[in-house]
Image (cartoon, rainbow, N blue to C red; front, side, top):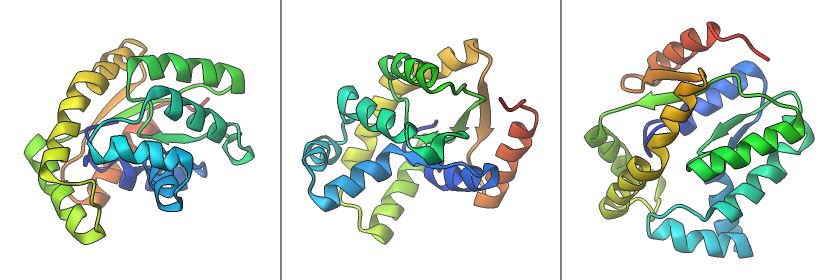
Length: 186
């Protein structure tokens, strides 16, 4: 978890590789559907272009289908999900159904202005039309309103690990691994 641009996707790949599990990124799945022009992609694009989150019903179904795939049986890492309190409840039901359990929830903490700069730079280098300054700031607002409250939920459950997301990628990765090494795996 963390605000848009905190480095979640970058770190998710390293963590998933380290533990030999799939990284399930809702953003990647949305972008793939948009580029393929699927009905889900067309619906998702309307929200993404406005800097809004894709509705829970669409996102929940997509995640449910993905964690039911065979490669996720030994475990998985979620990147970009859950984002709302309703999605936390939905995820709880999904993992009860599959027999999984959450081992940890990693939150990357970063300075908001640093994040805006990162996303504007990414927009230029990757040609991501959905990353304009206005859209980026709107995503930050939505994160504060809808996603930040999840931090307290997972802190109360004893699952939260907060990691400083600023610095070189390798430094942040090492901080995450150091924190995760102290967590018993289920």
